Length: 333
Ligand code: AHM
Ligand code: MG
Image (cartoon, rainbow, N blue to C red; front, top):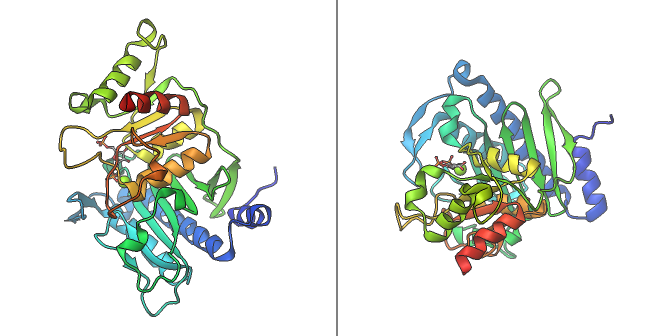
């Protein structure tokens, strides 16, 4: 079989759809290269002395793992000097990271969750990197947080790398979703799945069931109906999976369907859900919609949410569109 590299894919996409100009191609290739480096660190584990907890907390008061910090550094360093970015923002940093003055600036802004699924790092379960690309507003001067406050529908690219049995990169630039597998010997990304499609129907759901007693009524009703199986109102037996790595759960859903949920709940009413709009929900919603699925916060399309702060959290329901429609309907009804 003829191998198509990430570079060839990006060049050909530009020829076909005119959506990946050279600067954006550079950006995607630099992020992909950084993910290769992160994959290498993750793969070393205890041998690289990268496991365990660092003595720091991130802006949300969560204890950082060593690999959270290493991955953040890798992405910052890789993306600073290329001239393709105006600024970056990361789940692991309190405020935005403008490109230092010694480097030229570009017209894109990059947001990332450098290593998602932190609770799985030390136990050798799949984790990943999630990224989202926005355009800097016209005539932007010194970048500020306000420049990042753009709805997810404005993303020009989004993707994730999953560090599992294989390292894969899943990417969209608004014309479908494609998947690349890292050839570890050659150090190159090879196109292995074209135009991924999420089946509209599914019998599989993903949610952290231990929070059930804290859920709001629409989520409780929906999951109770799934659990009731073929003698309940849905008339079908549903299966459940929860990896506690959004990247790994979404990757399974892209491949064989399913619905992923991280709702808001009553544990801490000041916190509308756990997942972050800019680093997790928006890029995943873009990918899922591009693969024919749906993504809502229970009430509206995630990509339509107008953000008001960088580290904003949102409830997330995404995946097979028929199931997302059912649970969204229960919130609206
Ligand atoms: P993180 O960014 O701190 O790793 O948190 C996000 C992760 C998601 O990958 C995953 O879906 C969720 O947290 C799991 O949460 P929980 O441990 O509550 O099940
Ligand atoms: Mg995360």
